[in-house]
Length: 371
Image (spheres, rainbow, N blue to C red):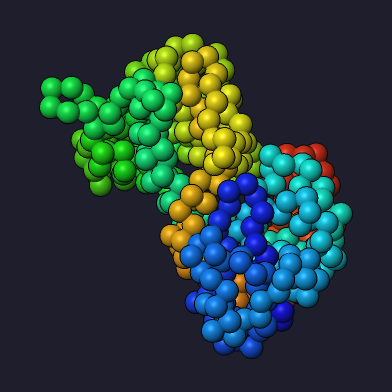
């Protein structure tokens, strides 16, 4: 199969779909790998690193899309990229379709076979291709929050860890999954007072067993959140419902009870966000204020550390990508229920139920294509 890796064109996105090491594995499996020139440079992988392992460098994204049978990316395709997709071509990348009707409609129109990293799901409900970026984004969330709590950056002027005699920041983490637990890990390591909220009591019990009284766990009910919001200096949103739009846990009216200059970092913004007042921003223009509360909503946070992020992502995506290339998408999906859940749009049909439900579109079971 011919594998194509275009350069990412989303604002300030420097990751790349394949590292040279991952590309070498595709070549070893007998596939041709075509890389758009300079695609890896943002992640510190020059073209020479790819040619050394047998890849071909092409001059433009258009040339990559035209030649490739499977496109491997990082972020959701932008409109110019969607326009280059063709029927039957495999697109293997993050999609996050639930909050994005225009992209969904574009992929339907393209006729491509669209496999989303974020909905590949193991029997234990874990999301193996989302996890590495969730780890990066979660750890970054506390770093970013600490930065914006500084007065010169718009915050209250709070040092995350405080100093002897002066307490550190109060950090409220919404969601105790991969993002939330990593955010809490870094925040507590910085010396902040951390409260992590979730509806999964077993998960909260597990974190208590791990960290004891280093953090406070809280059942995520509306009443409980309203009790702790007034004390929060930093709120980190890390709620996820696989494939679906994220529910709002903090409403616009709740900002009135929050401190002036407090900070919101909504990591779940790429699925719609769990704070009503957040919207997607970019690394070039990352923040905005609502009711004197600073909001950070960058939808591709891991793009700020592209070398780490690309390598971590490829550790997870490689085995599934090789299966698609080695077997073809039908056999690969039929043979792996976890990978099958990554299918979102196939040949003009929405095959992921939550996406269809969110947008009011017709749902076609994947089995229709695999029979």
